[in-house]
Amino acid sequence: MVWVSNSLGTTNPMKRIISDAHDVGAVVLVDAAQAIVHEKVDVQSLDCDFLAFSGHKLFSPTGVGVLYGKRDLLNKMPPVLGGGDMIKTVSFDRTTYADLPAKFEPGTPHIAGVIGLGAGIDYLESVGLDEIHKYERQLLREATAALSEIPGVRIIGCAEDKSSVISFVVDGIHPHDVGSILDSEGVAVRTGHHCCQPVMERLGVAGTVRASFCFYNNSDDISALVKGIRKAQEIFS
Image (cartoon, rainbow, N blue to C red; front, side, top):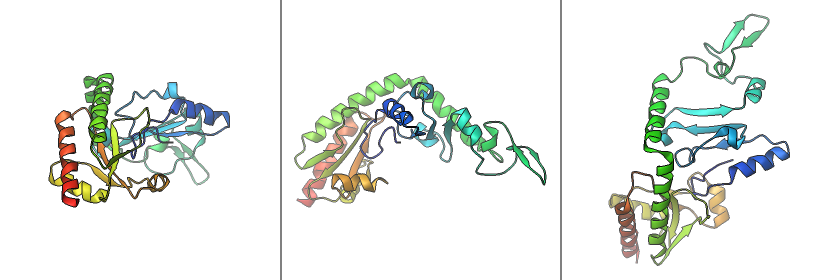
C-alpha cells in the first residue's frame, strides 16, 4: 500500500489501513518512497509488517534503499538470492542460513551507497523534519492558491491531507506539451501517467503535469511555474 501517492500527493491514513488489514489477517507492505522525506516514519507506531523506501528520495545515491520487515516474518521467509555471508553451513545434505539481516544480504553490499544514504538521513535530520513539513505545507497552500486562479487549469487530487505535490491539467493542452514549455522556461516538472495508469483512467485523464515542492523551493519557483503555464496557454490559444 502506498503511503503518499506519487501521482496525486494524497497521504493515505496508513495506521488505520494497517489496523484494518490486520483485522482480516492481511500482511501489509508499506511503500514509503514518497513519504520518507515528508513524514516522520515510525514502523513500531505504524505496526506495519514491511516498509520500503529508496535512498535517492533522501538526497542519497541511486541504487540503495531500505527494506524493513518484522523479525518473525523475515525468519519464516527463504532468501531470494544466494551469495557470500548469507549462510551458516553448506553441505550436500542441507544448507542453513545466517541470522537476520545477513540472510537477505548476499555478496558484497553496496557499501558506498549505504554510507551516502546515512549522510542523506543525517542531513535531513539536521534540517529538521518538522520544519521541513511545516515549510512544505506553506508552499503547497501558496501554489494551490496560485494555480487555482489560472483559468483553464484544473488541479487533480485535492485530498485534505496531502504532501507538497500538485498534479494538474490545462484545458486543450497535452501534459507533455505543457511540460516542454515549462522546461524551456527553466521549470522542472514531471508529465504523463506517473506509472499510475489505472489512477489516470479512473480520473478520466490521459496524464497530468506534476509539480513537486521541497524545502529547497521558494515563492519564486511558484511564480515561475505560473508564468510558464500562462505562456503555454498563450502559445496554444
